[in-house]
Length: 75
Ligand code: SF4
Image (cartoon, rainbow, N blue to C red; front, top):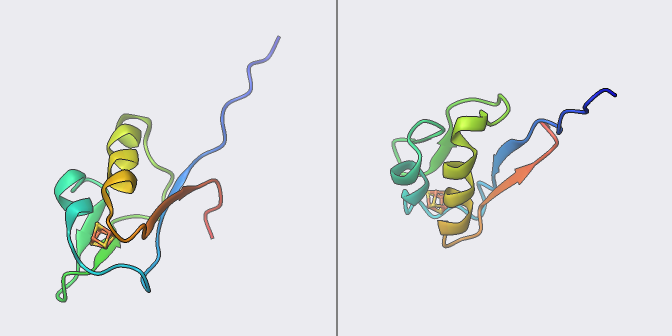
């Protein structure tokens, strides 16, 4: 029996919602950065590595603007 792998998951930031609290960066600097105006940006468009999934979920839960999501779509 072959085991199916779960689909890769990606982070998304809604730039219209982000207010630059920087919590995401403080929680997970491995995946997030902030620009010169303090707004969040992703360091990569690659799938979230397994070892950082818990921190990515924490960032989603701690964004006060609900600007971060995890999706199975890379676009
Ligand atoms: S925590 Fe949310 S609002 Fe704050 S910088 Fe990150 S994405 Fe933007």
